[in-house]
Length: 356
Image (cartoon, rainbow, N blue to C red; front, top):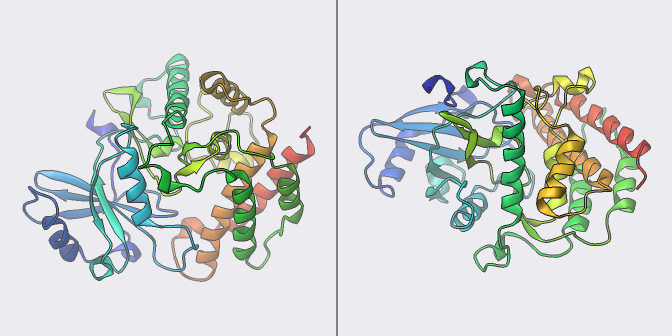
């Protein structure tokens, strides 16, 4: 089943680093590393960059920020590593942190290195080699939601987890904070979307539903499947935005990426995960299933769905701003400005039909 393992690719020139310096750093901190490593790059990298370091007898994964300007609270590798280390004893799907580089003389930026989980990561389409029919795909989908429910059920009052969040008032902080990020990310031709911002400010719930550990970027391409048993999730990746917050905000953020089979052609073109496959739950079915499994009331979900789309719109626009300013030359970012404009229209469509 090796063909189903997530594969790294050739290193992009703009994302290269001093491998010899990193090798020397790691050999001082991780026992049993011998020989010279090779380096490859995992696909994606719209936000942080992820590399495979291959030693003769061991594989490691390195995470670092991209070059160029960064949002104030984004790309914090040291925080991400701290969150993962604190959560690992309570949520077994977190990869183990092996080394943290806070000395900018090594890479010029903070970074961390973690264990490599050898498994499959689902991207745009379900690999035919997995052999999943609609029934098995539905089981995979429900298991994916179950892992999110389990994360939200971790006891967030434990002392090791307290520093990762700010407690009550999460929704209000998110609406205010992401609205400000949106305004700061504007480029020429950006739709201001002030009507969307005003609706979110007006319709936000008066209090959080609960305070729990939330992932904040929970998608199929951030989970690792056992290639021999593809219905089993063995890891959850990308903890950059994890915090203590409202679980329905986490679900809303996840659904922003959930393109289903009957969505319009433009939204279909953005699809990065196989949520349109036969057997996958629709967005409404995901919400209802999560409600049954978690016990949280999900009857009026419009605010959370709009906010999730809006937050994704901000992230996309922030990346596009880096491209527009010449801070990255990755051609996949060229259309992100238009993608942000579309998401604003999609927010308005949900708002127009909302009873909130």
